[in-house]
Each structure stands twice: as C-alpha cells, then as structure tokens.
Image (cartoon, rainbow, N blue to C red; front, side, top):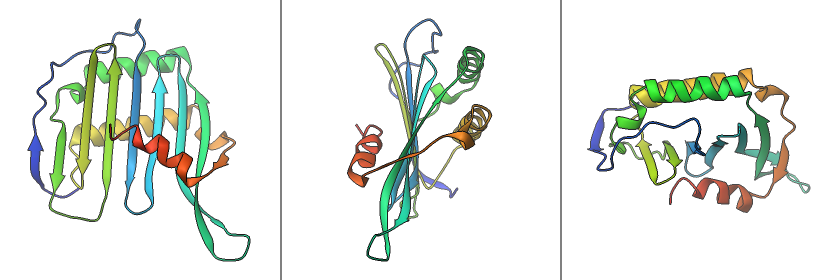
Length: 168
C-alpha cells in the first residue's frame, strides 16, 4: 500500500447491516491488464467466486480464462460475519482511496441492503479497514471450503461480466 494522494469522503448516510434483511457484498481484488478476482456473497450464505487464470492453449502458448466456483456459508458463519461488519468501521470510511502509482492494483467492495449502499474503491492505497476486511473474507472462505471448490472454466468475457458489477 502506498500513501494516498486522493481520499474522497462518503456523502451517503452510514448504516448497519440488518441480519434479517437481504443483503449483498461484492468484493474484488486485482489489477490491469489481467482482471479482478471477485467474490459475491448474499444473506443466504451463497458465495460465488470468479478469478482469472492462464491455461495452456490447444496450439501452444497460454490464454487467459475465468474460473468460477461456489461455496455455501453456515448460518453461524453468516451471523459472525455480519457482526464483524457492524462492529468494524468499514461502513463509515471514505469511498475512494487513490495513490500516485499507476500499476492498476485495485480493490473494491460494494455492500448493498435495501436502499442503502456502501462502495469503497482503493487504487494502490489500502486503508487498514480494507486490509482487515480482506483478511476476514479470506479466513472465512478458507474455513468454509475454499480449497475443496470444483472450479468451472468460463470465458474471459463471462468473467469480465462478474467484475463489472464492482464498477457500476
């Protein structure tokens, strides 16, 4: 993480996630030119993961494709995750962090529930709240079976559609 040159405050009202109401969290990490690995989680515990990978092309060389997989979180894990989100200051931090490095490294999160939305975009500067959020997501996914997922190969175009949900 590099020092932020630009920080844009959030002009939307802060909110807490209500565990009894539908919500969606989309989180992406990556960079140009390959793309962004994305995770979409909902209140039912469905987690859809999409990432980019190079595979050997039939005529030699390598080609970039997407990989898609699904996980289901337990009710206890969903509840603990919502408690974590609400206890953290993630929903209160600014919406944009940008450093003066142009390598394309970017993280973004979109949290939606009803009329409320929180979007955070980090370009080469990652505040502590986002690092903690990423680490929490990683641990949750690992404990929920990340390494047992059967990945489906999808086209790069299809993978790009998942990524675009972050950049509405």
